Every structure is written in structure tokens, then in C-alpha cells.
Image (tube, rainbow, N blue to C red; front, side, top):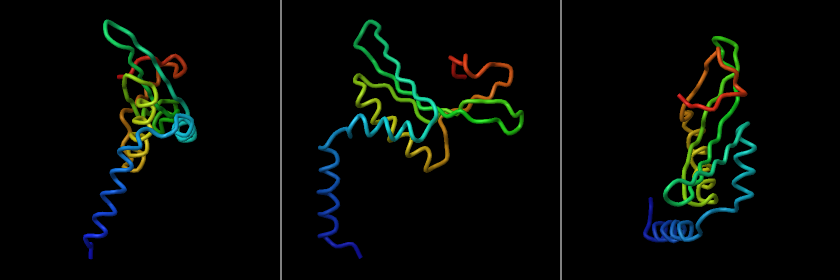
Length: 119
């Protein structure tokens, strides 16, 4: 049975996690690097502020055609790189637990090394 004390401890722990902010950039990058084969960090600047995009993708083999293909596991955009990497790590961990990647691309006619467009 859940008591008031248990609830209070849970709320205090949750509050500490929210106040803590992002984890260490090196730890987040290490986790992503150990999990997927490719990590892209793109920086964009248009009319507004600089935006960072983090894309975590894994190179795999299409079992039907036998060709190499990418599976994108996480895509995040933020104003600062640390937050983008933190959110990409969280998304990657959640998507792996659920087994649902962001998108899959398995085009047998295209060279995987030259793939720059997501469909």
C-alpha cells in the first residue's frame, strides 16, 4: 500500500530531478555513442537564433533485400546543444524500450553513405 510518506519521498525525488537540469554532456554523448552507430549534430542559423539538431541513427541491414539501411532512433532540435543532446538521449532510451524507431529508410538503389534526405 502506498502511504503518505512514500508519496512525499517520490515528490521530493521528482522535484530534485527537475531542478537538476541536464546531465553531463560527455555522459549523454557516451550513452548515445554506445547505443547507435551514427550521431549527427547539426547547427542551423536562419533569421532567428542558432538551433541545434541531434539525430541518432543506426546502420542496419534490410532483411528482405540484404541492403544496408538507416534506422533513425531520435531527432531533437533545441536552442542549445546540451539540451538537444539530453532530449535526444531521453528519446533514444524511451524509443528503444518501446521498440519504435522514429523512421526507417531502406532504399536499395541509393548508397547509404550518401544518404542526406529523410523520407
